Image (cartoon, rainbow, N blue to C red):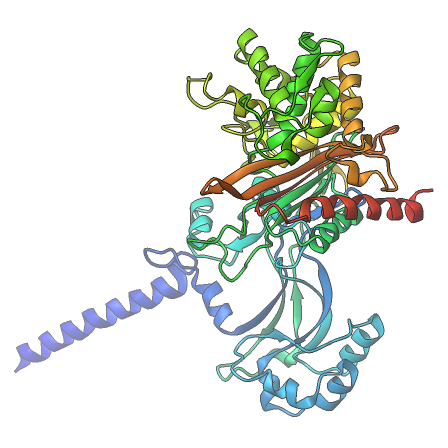
Length: 586
């Protein structure tokens, strides 16, 4: 009997010791890194007893060239804590101030376990109304500026988005395995500049509650935020928010469904605005068949006759164009008589061939040029600032080849070794030729400005929280070689003639308020039963012609011939910038 009692006592003693050690382990020894997952028990405990509403994700801000916010905006919101549902408070007064019916406010509490923002406010809250709401002195009811979601921001493909990612967190913060909600840049500048923009901690409204979800410690909602005077930093970009809005409106009004538009400051070669369509589908983003996150302004696509600008530059510079030489433009690309009368253009000079975009002329010129040097197209693409990537690339701290643009497409001219079969199509920007809208806009900026082509810059500097400069991105040339000034002037005159000549492919733009120079392009992308059913429709150029300020490129991808979204975008853009300049230029 005594042995049994001793055995039981020993067993109970061992169990008690184990339990005591376990309690010691949880409560003292490993509070901050408990178990294989290194869980921070203190933070988990606080989280269980705390309602939190995020005011700011703590990431660095992205600003336009005038200091205006481009990344997720801040708007006044009414923030409600769930426990309000079970207590008496002046809900009628909130309804009167916001215009949201009492029944709607009550319904919004249904199913809510975390703080939320009041929906249904039709008129933005003024500072007076914000004060009026806060002066109700209701714990769990607060009105203040709060960061919006990034699903409605300008230049969404360029700026990009940030999302919470547990795997990325654990990869980057191996020493702290207890996951804390933290957003990482996924695409765009948010991703490229992640090392600069990453969060040092979120800003939150906090309220401690008991096990029933009711407030503790005097019902006081606290505002907690990081106190670092230098972080987060800001990106000072070259984007002009007003011009970005104009470009977005121009594209939307033209109903451009798939494609891109780019606007560059000719003098500085800085990016002013960039738009890609379609807009992001945030419900299906990155799903198997979703491509709405693709930035088509950086994607290399078939340019069609815009590429004739490169062939023309090479032909002029190499001296293979005779003074009054005529080309039989009744012929098609391969030299056969055109079947359709409307495609017969007659005998044209080199200049007229460029204005009217005669395929036969440029097929023959391209053939001659490539026989002289198989790399002729790439050589002149480099001289004109088309060969890239053209975006800013250089040394940033420990990274020798930091690129400001994410996944910028590289151009192609020939694929494979059998060039003879491809020369004619390549000469008119078909076959294997692919370039991005950004590169084409850069070519137009180079032609308008003259001299060496430059890299396109989108971020000027990184600024500390207090406004002092952390890092500056210097201007950089793209290539040392450039087209001779007299050759460049002839190219400018050709681009102007596309618009001014009665039969020029850009003649529709003669009545625009700014004088325009440029080149159109149509590239076949889908042919069914010998008929072209889809094509890329381009127009790229610069304006005003006499005193160039803006270079641009617009493309509608894979559209039927009757679609006019490219030309409509160009028209809308130039008219809108003209009207904007009238009211904003001193």
